[in-house]
Image (tube, rainbow, N blue to C red):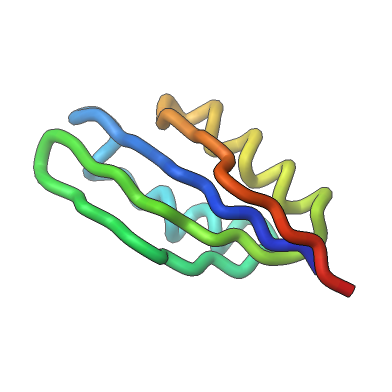
Length: 79
């Protein structure tokens, strides 16, 4: 099982969309919101994604296609 911390920033067009819901529904990863600040025209979140590394990579790649700015912060791989 792997764990990756990811920073996500969203502009006005992306803020109102249910990205976290889609992420947890469409990918077999556990999503933990560590920090967040979301307003009507801008927002950011620090997420921890946990699961098989291949699924975390797929989920992160999908997030990048949504127009969100995605930056991986830290990665930890457990047994």
